[in-house]
Length: 154
Image (cartoon, rainbow, N blue to C red; front, side, top):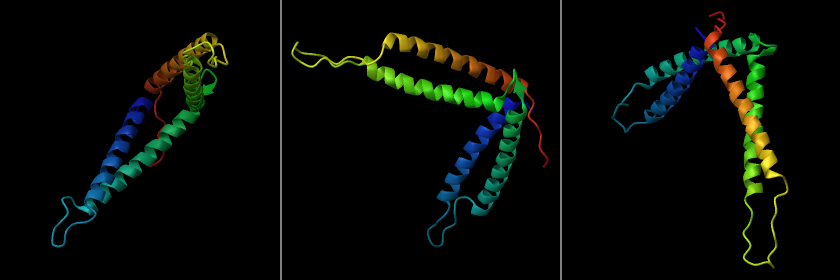
């Protein structure tokens, strides 16, 4: 199985587990003399199976990400780098929005508000950062579709 397929299955399992949680909660109590619409025992069994599969899959994904090296970096390192770049980009974008919005003056006697930074220069840096994020994401996607998932013992 390719890493990308495992990642999609993990997402499916997360949705399935969330759905099972809702269904369990909806069948936790019934009016006296009534039966639940679904068997809590069957739902709990399905939850056990889904959680066990998810646990195994996450271990395999993490193992694969930690052991797969491409151009001197593991997938785990590349994911961490992407996440750091995205965090920096989000913060810079917010800062630039604040630095760009200047308060209007209604007369020359009002206090003038100025940006504390060169917005144009920082915007160019943010554009380069966005490009690096896209390139990193493209490489991660390529690796996801070409790398085989490392199988673990049952």
